[in-house]
Image (cartoon, rainbow over all chains, first blue to last red; front, side, top):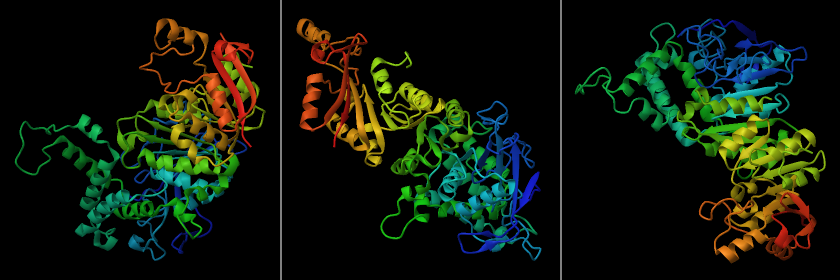
Length: 373
Length: 198
């Protein structure tokens, strides 16, 4: 992994206060933009990326050379039309594509490593808002995010209710479940069990690539549906006619996961993976707004949108997503209805599991385009 | 008024005041919502059980949530809307009586429209054919229809009286033409009621 200089970077003028009580000085936010900002700055769309995503939504990734992660959705005449909108996507703090994270240098000139403070989804959003302040954008046309990006979109709507006129949340949740946390813990333990991890101080030597690859492999399974895996690989063998009676990648699915795992280590920092998964695990929007007694009500998080005074919302789930299943989106929709916020919701049918929001689902294109009208 | 709307929806659209808040339950492809939103400046929201129809609604810029009215109306606070609309859906609900209560809980007023099972064509089909009617108003065979609780105008009036629901206005249609209330239970194919409860 390389700590890239992004094409655009903004240094926050003030320390960034964090949920942990700490504050982070000299925060850098790396971001990309597409399309022109109009004169009254009313056509800006903020796209929030997912766990291992980055700011390269619709431009080639500088490390892998692959096309942007959402080129099918963002661009001229695409559903998020850059002829019409000014699209902003910033690398989240804690990540490793140019924004401040554990691989960044602390004031002593050494990488933070595990000295980087533990951050939350709300801290990421504070970073996004600070960037918008710097760009002079007081209200977004829309904030959009899938998966962890959806958590940021929800957090932005809850904490900064006037900053976005529309909120589009795809395949996401308002809280991490025990199962979500459990899968993340497997990934973190794989990284920390790698002897190269060295309590996080590996930047001068070999990185814990084996651990990070296993973390990615485990997570990748959760992004796909069983049906998708079966269709794609079944029990087919990889470049061989019979089983090897050994531990090579006999099956195509093994080979695929190994490829995914090792490819990931080329572009991602293991410590960033620890910090960002932690932020997701800590995410519970209702808890953030709990008034104290009794059960935290998610509706309280959306008080700023009561009686249709705030943003319009749209939530989309996918029927094969078992990571953030439809019930999680419904839970959010119920809370929004309880405060009277205008909300659309649809469960789309797609075979690709959680990853459906990134893939070829024409119905999603229509929903996104329609919601931005 | 748009001539593309069904007659019952036209009546409803023309009796909703601008600037009000409306929930259309079972909104289908959003024809009424679109009319209300664009021409009547109404805060119009919809609920629809069918995902493809919801997708069409959202794609045309409407606020519609995929949901089952038998279950999901419970999430709206009391009097969330000026009007709750249930067009051609009452007879498909699990418990029409409880649905009516929910309508008048989430809405200050409710529009309810339904096909009248006591229309003379329906009566004739039963009396002379001895078979469940398949008519213009009820086009689907008994085994495939979603209409699990057929209702007549007289039945509905009885239910309203039992529940002490006030009828503010009522309209009846035969072959898409308005007809009077007196003969509605045998001449009316469709009924539309505007209801309220103190």
